[in-house]
Length: 443
Image (cartoon, rainbow, N blue to C red):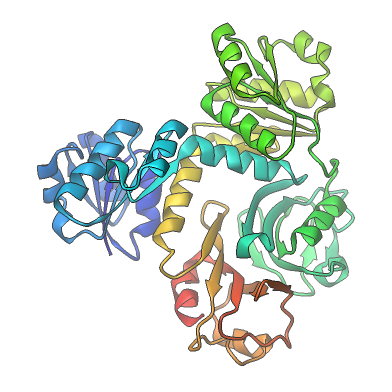
């Protein structure tokens, strides 16, 4: 497919890097230095210009494009790009926005702005925060098969009961598949004799109940995030509080600005809003923030979020989640003790890339900066899996593939070597990203 990406910031670059091998990609940006650098960094065509200019879009090949992705840092610009493209072609358009109000306007007005699919960065980040907060030690959580199957990536502490045990020894769960380990820079597809070590990150796929049981077993923190404190009433902080409210929680939210504190207090009936500077250690101690199960740092700077998270950890908080705008800081934050660092732009890029693949798959989750993916595919009659035992069928699949779960007519099936896949089954598969396209074609 011919794809035009408008905006070569962090989101645009990430999308271009993910699509360059399988699509013809053109990137448009106003910054000449950025487009020149991108020409040498990626196998894409770049054009220096304003993506809201119809002539620039035509120069980029709008007439032959199957997809236009507008992902600049300006919501209005992205809407105009999609509208301009839609005015002269029937190309499919995707717009990235930060404000939820724009998303709600689009959802309530069919075809508004000329946008076919809209991704709201702040809402997406808030939803990620909620999913991750519910499982101790989890770095990534996603659901498949309409909630029937859950995938999660966990840290394995050195004192975990499953550390230094083989997968066979650790596998005592009714409906769980151990898919892979990430160890330093190495990715290991697990076998029965694979030894799990402290410091590993393990990917498991199974029923929500078994995934929760596993979290309880491996984690050093309590299993339920009952007491939640959100620091900062930024749009992400506000949306995160609303997400927790929608799931029955009564979070606390700390905001220093008087007017903003009053505004969010009026909009969040089940959230206790406290007006204070959250970097004040005395205030945090006085309000017993250290007793919280989760503290989410969602202030307006990475440095403040790091400071708040470290203060919370020192006070005894079980789990800290920090929002970071600079993707390069993610590993640094987690190295110094922050449990999970979430980058909104990276979340947005992954969501858009997922959408570009929905012609083949029902759902996609990316792991470890796209080193691997967990995908849900509805099996057709021509699939290499159909009518064969999984133990035999997987011999025809590339290395780096694990069948993690099967959904059949609303029933969760834990795959074993003797399991036979049927047409119409939904299979949830862990795949090394380097063989993804081959696996999708075979399955």
